[in-house]
Every structure is written in C-alpha cells, then in structure tokens.
Length: 162
Length: 169
Image (cartoon, rainbow over all chains, first blue to last red):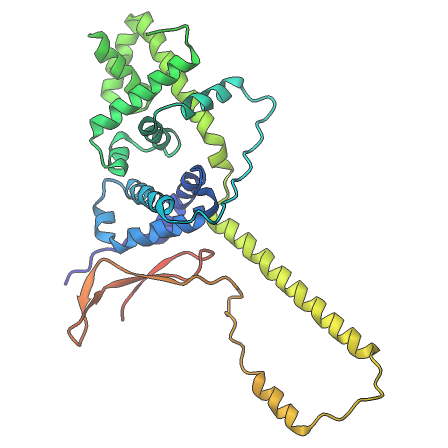
C-alpha cells in the first residue's frame, strides 16, 4: 500500500479556523455555538480526507462542509435554549454613513445572492471556490454576484441607472 | 464590444476575477472609452464599499485557540482562587473553634484517609474542560487480524490544543 501524504491539519486549522469562526458568528442563531460548529466542521472534513485532498481548494471544501454543519445546527431541535446574540459592535461615530447604507443594502439582498456575496467579499473565495461551497455551476455564481453588485449599486445610488 | 459583454467584464474586474491578460486588454479599452472607465470605477467602488461594510467584525474576532486559551487560563485561575479561599476559611475555623471537646482521632481514620486520598485523577494539563474527539481517517489498512481500520486517526483532545493526526502503530 502506498502511503498518501496526509493533510496538514494543524496548518489548515490555523489558516481556516478564524474565517470559519467568523462565518458562523455572523449567522443569526449560530453565534452562540460557533466554536463547536468549527470543531464539527473539521471533524467532518477529516472523516473524508480523500475528498478534502482532491477538492478545488481545501478552504472552499471546508466552507462547503461548514455550510452543511450550519444547516444541521439550525435544523436540530434546540429551541429551548435561547442563544444570546452578541451585542453588535457599536459603530464608530466617524464611520462613513455609506457603510451603514451598504450594510442595509446587503441585508436586503435575496438570500442566494447574499450568501455568494459574503463568501466573495468576506472570505475572499474565487468563483470556482464559491461554486464548490454552494455546489452550483460557476456560471450561476457569476450571475448571482453580478446581480448582487448591480443591486447594491442601485440601492446606494438610486438616481444613477446603468 | 457589446454593452452586456462589457458590463460583465467590468463586474468581473471589480470582483477580481479577470485573468491578468484579459484585464490588460480591458484596461486598454477603458483608456479609449471614458464612459466605460467611469462605470468601471463606480462598480469597483461599490465592491470595495461592500468589502469594507462586511470586513470589520470579522477582523475583530480573536483566534479561536487564543480565545479558548484565555478563557481556560482564567477558569483555572478562578478555580485555584476558590480552593485557596476554602482552605483559608477551613484553617481559620479550625484555629478559632473551641478545643474543649476534642477527642483523639481513632487510628483507623488515618488509614481511611490515606485510602481515600488516592492518586489524583485530574487532567495533567490542568484543563477542566475536556472534549475528546477522535475521528477515523479516510485511508484504510488491514490489521494483522485481517480487520480493516483507518490508517490515521484524528486526535483532538481539546479546542485549546491543535488537532493532530496519528498513524496507527
């Protein structure tokens, strides 16, 4: 039997751990158990090491798993435990009002567009990586992101049309 | 160039998805088309603004390992503090209590105490919180008995420590 090189798990955890934690913490209802969900993500990923090794990018593969872990956590019956939402960081007084408008515009995007946009702008994933995470064609990722950016542009500058 | 094609290219450019050679060609085109250049700048600004709007909270998050370490260290310190307080109260009470009705302890109680004070069972690393998660790896191998088992196993003793892979001996 030829031994295949095993995944550099420590490095992967160092690289992707904080981003995954941020990913879970930004989802309403998952913030309180974000650290557990990061663990679940890694445990699931290493149960299928070969797929992880063969993925377009290991980071994208982890986000794909994280997405399912998040869905499962949402689906799991935990309604009795009220997860305290973290207090949103107070906006700095000098912060550009445009950013607030942008956050509102992003919140108003359709879910599918918002999900792709957050993976792009927050996690800096490429079209191909997002396609792997969401298990959709690259063309669909591209069109969702284009639509999202145009929608944001429209929301921030309603007087300017293309 | 068709307007729709140009718009798609400008969006790809703003999202950082154009190949360098294509971006070079597009830049050359934008130099000759001020309206398109203006549109390109507007889209790039929108993407940049979106990135800024989404970025700060993620950057503020501590590294999960560092956060867990800090929490565990505080938890361990707090436990030690409570233990020290209990010892101080116990010693204080023992010193202050009247000793008139003291009776010699039966000899058997010493042996009993020694029996009860067996070797500590605490985690040598001092963490109260222990979540042991062991997961089988993907690669399989045959044992001497002919059973199939994973080549590696994932050992993650605590989120305060890094996970590691260990090869089955």
